[in-house]
Length: 115
View 1: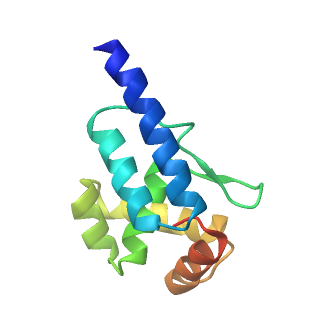
View 2 (view 1 turned 90 degrees about the horizontal axis):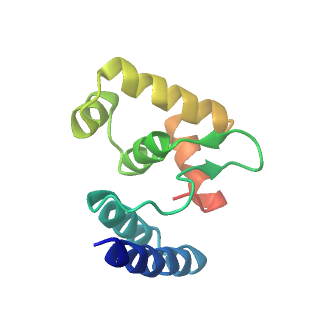
């Protein structure tokens, strides 16, 4: 019911904030996936990169897969998107994180606490 969603949203929001505060990226991912599965919206679903352009929710999904060392074809398959779309997301992430390589983007994301 609607009351359950409100209570769940509150609990998941607090749990995600605590996970992020303490640097538990894996737990943050699990909480975000749980919220998505149950169609619970947690915040604005965007992450600002040093006050510049934000990463979209999908770009964050792609970034997490980059952290796992996934290739564009693997990203496309896992997210049910085309390879071209996966490549476009990776390019956007590199640009937004001011990186020239996937490894550099992953390193920057870790350093800034995005993942």
